[in-house]
Image (tube, rainbow, N blue to C red; front, side):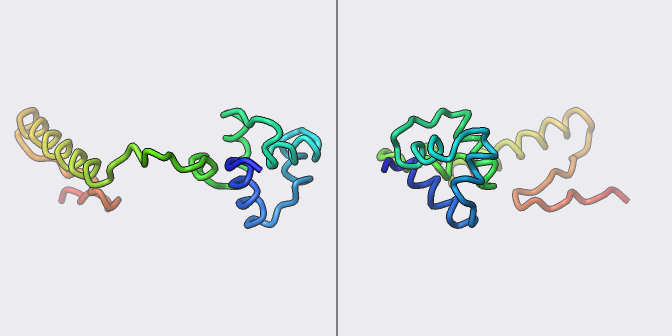
Length: 114
């Protein structure tokens, strides 16, 4: 069994779906779907996204981990977001003569003006 097929199988079992159910939702036979899970058939990117939607998981969850690690460094990403917010506020200050409230990193609603 290939790694993608195994990851798909694990998520399918967690959700309690049968191979037949997923195959029917994808418009294919159960044996064709089984071949994908066993790695006998390649899974296209489009098909992987369809399966992820059915399993209600992000498509990246169905991909094997890269031996080179993640391309996203979360601390660097957070620093870049903070830098962007700072620059954005400076632009608004210059343009409007006042600072605009922005949505925080934690998803808080901006404060309304009184």
